[in-house]
Image (cartoon, rainbow, N blue to C red; front, top):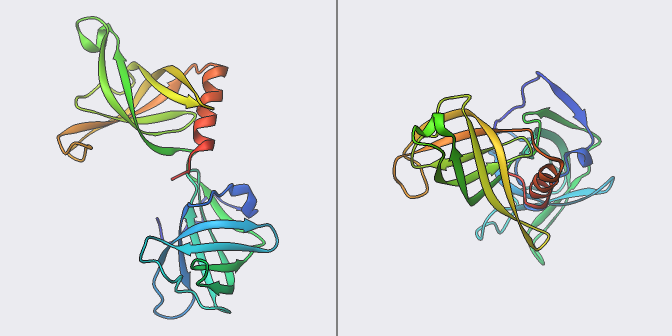
Length: 231
């Protein structure tokens, strides 16, 4: 997470416009000399009243914020990088550790992605057309790493083709308790070789852009990005 939001393309938004979800990662820092950034979590907000933030992890017994101090809060919703200044109204240790911050009148935000992207680890199948595989249409097992309504990133043991190549992406989604199979036409946006695959072996990270998405598939993709915590 960056220390500062660039002044380019920064907009002033209401906090509710960011659509924060409980559990989203934040950074808080007291505005005092020598203060360091603290990894925190967004817990809840009541418009016009306050914002609840808590420490991260089992060792997060304290927020390290002091009542009456001013702090800066930074975060990333999956679409926007944002920051705002706030006063610490109260701190609590029971029933759990959290700080109540003054609800901000405005938030500085910069749009990073046009659509919400969520992290995942879902099995998927990529189908390569004749011109990519050389032996007729073939399939490759892949892992869906993240997804938005406009594209996705997958990891695969081998490359899937050149930038701009068309491939099909298939995976199953639990849509309100029922499995739904998505078969999406995509094009390869970028591809990088990496040794950081889930199994520790060399592999590829491939970015895919969705093409000609049907209304049904848009609905399912929207459901996926709105029903899971953003990253």
